[in-house]
Length: 84
Image 1 (tube, helix red, strand yellow):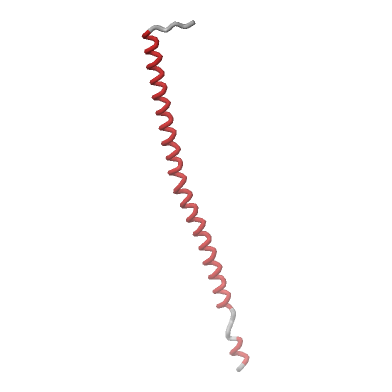
Image 2 (spheres, helix red, strand yellow; image 1 turned 45 degrees about the horizontal axis):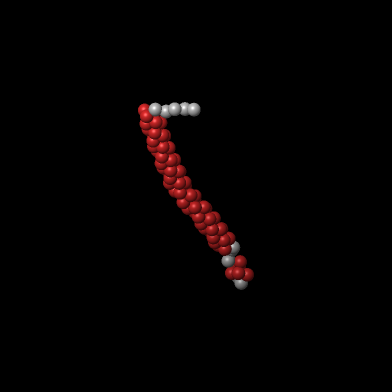
């Protein structure tokens, strides 16, 4: 059986308060760290969405340009040469 004196009880109570204080500091720092991770991930997610949208837009423009080029490359002078 352990018998603690008044000093030992105060000492244990003080250590318990210190441990609790350190635990709450740890939880607070963990929360800040998670918040920082989310703050870093969000802009990357947003920029990734813009990059995907930009790629889709560029591909659509390239397709339209190719269609326009094909329409212009068809010679329209053949109709005139038939009537000469």
